[in-house]
Image (cartoon, rainbow, N blue to C red; front, side):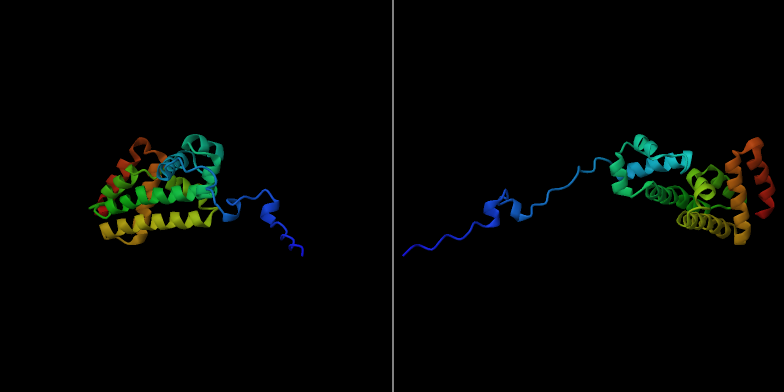
Length: 194
């Protein structure tokens, strides 16, 4: 009797596959993150706050923030994604502390000084440039301005509409750069509110 024929070789034996190939090893793809996301977002706040959204290109972001284009897209999804993160950081780091300080304001002149001395560049640019075209930015800006209005209204015991007018006047002084002491003149006129 003849011995039975050996079984045909398995696919693995007939191919280039090895034991490691069939175990499903998963290697990490790409490089490890070599940047501090917090630092990148802070730097983006300054960049967008100084040049506005449309004034900043992807190349500008890559150059000024010191990260690779792929890292920017992988972490933030897009330029707009980074912009929204930067705007929210600005609101948390600059606008929220302003509202807390406004809560302690004892008069309209103090409120005006607090608003005009705050770093609100990105908020102002977002309000005039992005909010009209982007609903998400518009909602963030509206909420931030409403918080400022409410803080002034609560601190001074005035109607919210009057507080909103004071906020608008203060932001106008910021936009104009306080030429010819506009802020001082306005402060003198606000004394009757106290």
